[in-house]
Amino acid sequence: MTVAVVLFTSDLRLHDHPPLRAALAAADEVVPLFVRDPAVHAAGFDVPNRAAFLADCLTDLDAGLRERGGRLVVRGGPVVREVCSVVAECDAAEVHVAGGVTRFAHRREELLRKALGERGVALRVHDAVVTAVPPGAVTPASGDHYAVFTPYLRRWSAERLRDVCPAPRAVRVPGSVRGEEPPGRAGVSGVSPGLPAGGESAGRDRFARWARSGLSAYADRQDDLAGDATSRLSPYLHFGALSAVELVRRARSAGGPGAEAFVRQLCWRDFHHQVLAARPDASVSDYRSRGDHWRTEEDAARDIEAWRTGRTGYPMVDAAMRQLREEGWMHNRARLLTASFLTKTLYVDWRIGARHFLDWLVDGDIVNNQLNWQWAAGTGTDTRPHRVLNPVVQGKRFDPEGVYVRRWVPELRAVRGPLVHEPWKLPERERAALGYPSPLIGLGEGLARFRRARDRD
Image (cartoon, rainbow, N blue to C red; front, side):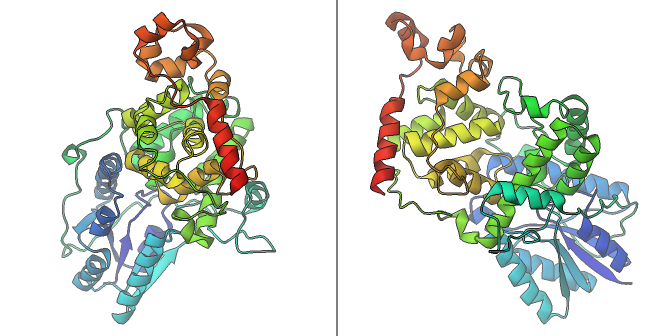
């Protein structure tokens, strides 16, 4: 009786799962394994919102496996130790895992390969599990990765995607392998009240509903903050509860401008993966250094706290930051705006903002979070690194009626008309009655400071 192990990491699904498919083809029995690695806690990645969503994903994955005669084996401890222990318990001949691009994933793969090799066990690493196109599969003639999105999009769009794997009909798991019950969401405290349910079932249902009602209009409505018309699939992609390959294929089958715009966003995700695969240090260091001398956390403590709590005095910024705490999620347009405001208007180091987002975002991962922050800060892949997003202009353009602002900033619900984006222009008595703060800094003053710093650097 041959046995293979599938180590689930950020690929918590049964549909379109190449490692599981390969393991089932190679062995009579398969151990679907998830390891609760204390290194994830030590690195500060298991924050409440992601821990709760992960618990949902694991519960759903276990349920799906049980419907097929199997189960999810959950173990707690250092990942290499636990994988080797499971391999020994079932005499497995090989271990399958999805490839990753972070320094954490690279180190895990390196340690697993060494430890398993000493036992004569093969480690099979599978590409195009987390992304649609494997990082490194598309490269320019002049280097190891694309530093600009548009030429990457052209090459990426011409790539032939692998076929979508069907979910298995049956999974036989050795009875001798012990495991824990998947953790439940109920045991996680500090979760955002509006956090959605996690898991493959919830993700597939969400995509099916949005594909029917929102995909065709996505090109026109993706920046409509009040309409909340995006797919909200990013948490499911982050945890691998949905397959990027399957989403691209299904969107292309639907066709139309909306589908094209949605696929473009999935391409941005792959773009960032290929950047970080080539430059792993970009998760903590400037991708393109401008020599910035950011304000320190100590010097900017008051401004940083106001930004974190949604009390900057700029309604669009504050609405977005309050949505983040309430839902563990934020609209992409709002992410760019709040990041630009922190780094360019307040001139605070992008790493401070990126860490706060990772503390709250259910979809917060090193790849997209850090590289989007660098894009907004002007240290990343933006071809216009000195652009500054004006929160008033952005509000009037993408929330013209002020619906998004009033939804998340209740102090301003009584303010009618466009002044909801500029409450400091209200008569002094009305302004005082709102209980809403004055702007931390004038936009002109912030812009002048940024330009002075840019010119000095």
